[in-house]
Image (cartoon, rainbow, N blue to C red):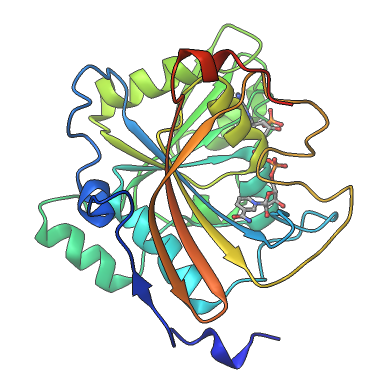
Length: 270
Ligand SMILES: NC(=O)c1ccc[n+]([C@@H]2O[C@H](COP(=O)([O-])OP(=O)(O)OC[C@H]3O[C@@H](n4cnc5c(N)ncnc54)[C@H](OP(=O)(O)O)[C@@H]3O)[C@@H](O)[C@H]2O)c1
């Protein structure tokens, strides 16, 4: 049950560190001209005890309508929306946008919806998933030679395939291809934890939008933002709070991700 207070009762926008965080977040590319890959912004919701789903990996149903709208708004900011194969399978999402956000994009001179990008090492992707029944935007799949031939044939005409010769997808290479071939400047990564963690470990996450939902799940088998968290990250990752908004019992946080300084980056995450 959602709290009756979850209806945007106390929405407030704050400034952090004396800078208008909202303004910063509207121009993520400023000052980052050296980056030859797109800006990558991840969006997640988690419980108060840090769980992003249940131990059965059920689709997210513990957040409010405002959070769903928030997810759509983050998606609408991007040129591409990116998901891992497990999230696609489990949530069976189309990765489209509501009509009003499509119209806003068109008014800004963008395509109606961001291109939809799927990552899978094994490539055993079911062409009957809902995403392949919806033509709102091109679908681009990054996988490897391990993708079975029958899957490649079944996806013919439904998605553009980038199959590398390596065992695993090179995520940095994938981002460079998105920039170069598809003119993608901003990527909205919508999980899940395995993909987020890989991107994080390779220093490929620039921003994190995190909704804290008013629940506690417990459960050692339920993943956190970085997965089942059996292993420490190679180094701690510094998150700078750039925006915070409270709506009902939910808190919407935005962090800039990056290593604070060399000393911090060398510190082991423990
Ligand atoms: N609370 C939230 O905001 C939120 C957001 C998103 C998802 N979720 C939940 O999270 C769960 C899924 O998360 P997850 O961690 O299990 O899966 P995930 O990250 O969505 O997908 C993992 C799969 O993606 C592919 N993949 C991941 N990293 C890769 C890499 N570096 N290179 C190539 N392929 C890579 C692999 O696919 P192959 O196995 O095909 O090789 C891997 O098995 C679901 O229950 C979903 O509902 C919650």
